[in-house]
Image 1 (tube, rainbow, N blue to C red):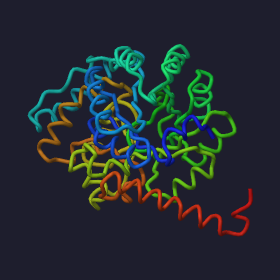
Image 2 (cartoon, helix red, strand yellow):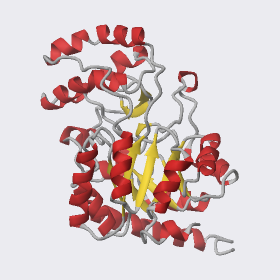
Image 3 (cartoon, rainbow, N blue to C red):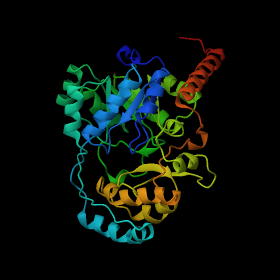
Image 4 (cartoon, rainbow, N blue to C red):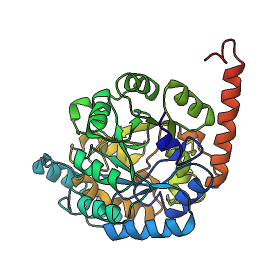
Length: 360
């Protein structure tokens, strides 16, 4: 366990950074204020947009918080495959009366500009998704006093994170909602993700840096389970997506517990990268044909997703959700943190009461 991490927030509860307008400053402030760790998602924002949200968050809380960055993506998408998929989406474009987006709108998500802002105006924690930064980048953030974390979905990725010099690794199980944080997007490994508890055990034996566990966690008892398995903290996304402060569309929040949406699946339909969401019409019709092309497909479908939301049509939206979505609770974020903390204490007490439960 790293005191450098646990000293930053008293409760082992991290609010996952959810891009696309979900992880707003109000949500992060509420979570940090309640004793957890709130996060801003810089993905899909400009560097200035990120900076403005940091300023807003600092004005709302004096507690530590984190900012998440997307790593730049290599150029290996097949333009012909993207064009074929664009032709397939022509009917969606006509239905929602909106043009498809430009797939070549950029692959680096303003990475260098965002890093410059975070080095000039350091924040307590920075995490990375879709790859691992260089040692130079991680060292520069360390010199600025920033604690760094990187998502990993395999043992090999976790070892790469440790070698690069990150302070902690976010171990993401296949249960997680939204995008899988794989370091390389290899279509041959689609569906081969590892469950969280198995992955924690494997990573715990392979690295020495602290582990933050992510994937399908919705209850305090599950937090207790990942802590017992070797994690230092748990990162929850879908649980906080449903909170009052979350910036998620109301249709998205309602869909989490709507019996119309019976399961989640990993799909490339909306972004070209594997991401877990509630199965809807768009996913069923287009998922089997979506190419491995991120962020090209994300840019291509952006307008369609916005138009579907504006039209109140959840069947055309990207309804990101983890496997535990049915356990979502309609609560203020502060109250959710308090409930999770109480559940964690109860689970630990129940474990200690078992024969041998108090053994060291």
